Image: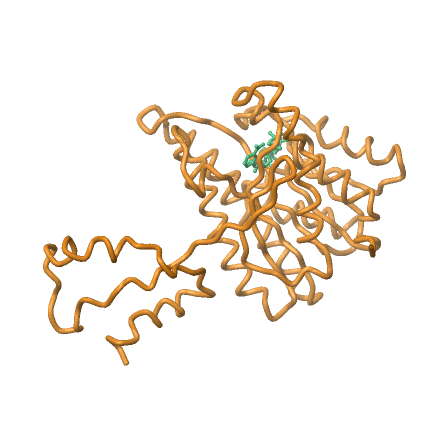
Length: 302
Ligand code: NAI
């Protein structure tokens, strides 16, 4: 088997001071990458900050010859995103891979969630992915190469109780992926999104210890490394991964049916009458862009 290597490649990982991001840092460094370990430190809910988290991972990598530099900027501002990428450029001269992984958690039911909780969560997960990707994409576009991996969550993709901001932000990164995938296509910049499940401080109180044992953060890294490799040409895809399970998810569109004729407004009773066919997912498939959805209306608009 040809080994997937990252020699001479620069990999920026946000939130790499702990959990899954730390596992990525080790996996990339072990395969020759120069790694920017970004982490502003802080608690699970995003409060506080401490350089220690990123520094510690850089030390761990250095112990076996891994090349890495720490970055302490928050992903949540454009200035922070630019500074993270500037650190990569200043130390290693380029950026080949960006893993948008930084995250915080403030789980609350809708009526208990205050504006600050919403803003903090959305700013780190969604705005953060935008801020760092924007700066990285500018370099990748110039060099004609880049691999970006976003991090969503099963909560956002499929739903969960009491995580409104988190779920909204995690679906937002899927939208951002579509944008990066389409704008990056002609520059050999791909963007994919993963939905991991792994033992970390984010999940240490949601699963019993014996189950957490089976969800090692290291088990997520192989998929991310493949998506980050030169040979990967896939873009715009969503993948689940956990405990050794890998699968693809997709937002699909079903053909449905054309009831109208572009002249009359359908009464709601006709919607009721055709409800089964409207809600059917038979023959549903992912689309390459919104333009493809026009194909289903073809009988009406030809
Ligand atoms: P974690 O809490 O161990 O790691 C997140 C890291 O992001 C922390 O080290 C934290 O300091 C850093 N961070 C937070 N705000 C930041 C900011 N503004 N700028 C830079 N760094 C910041 O959590 P875990 O589990 O490793 O999560 C990694 C990613 O995976 C997150 O995006 C999370 O939402 C996602 N995820 C994790 C799941 C799991 O089962 N652990 C499930 C689904 C998604």
